[in-house]
Figure 1 (cartoon, rainbow, N blue to C red):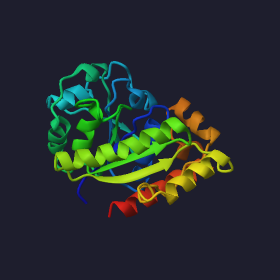
Figure 2 (cartoon, rainbow, N blue to C red):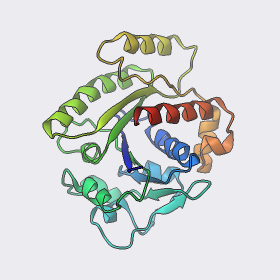
Figure 3 (cartoon, rainbow, N blue to C red):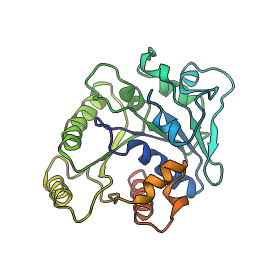
Figure 4 (tube, one colour):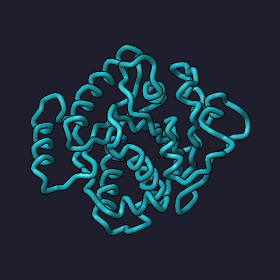
Length: 252
């Protein structure tokens, strides 16, 4: 199979974007796939989630500059997850629109999946890191929470993505958005989910899978592990497995 590049992108922070990236990587890796995970946020939350050292010698900036000697950190139960460390320099780094795309092309289908953890910033604010990531991607995915800020963010993100795709003649597909860390019996969640499902514009982008709140998620993050390693039978573990299955079908 050819490499599938997926950007995990939102315009609102605190919705579980990094946690989603880490668990999708683990989900694909559990199926025997080789996965590269890129920390494309100067806050380096993904690097923190994987417990990478602050002085990791090879970072995403080195990758963008196409320096020799690729050094990805191997993670996962079977060492088939490779992590490209983030850099605080990324925020001020002068990037061309296709810089990441050009660097990824040098890997020549070495990976089955590449997951890019993007910073939460609106695409409308000039050439953002998120836009650079999207221009390198085959697919874009968004986690959201059942609150007004997240909902406002997703309703402005979708048209921004569609405009970006048309303006620059890009080939990425928007996989959609899903609710993260939800209380299933909450009236807010049910109301928001049904509103999106009944909306002609958003219903085609709402994924069936949602991730339920689970105390094991916090425990996994603290230990630098995934929920699959902490409790493979927990509700959120089952949800992430279902999310991987749904995405794989959409990417066929």
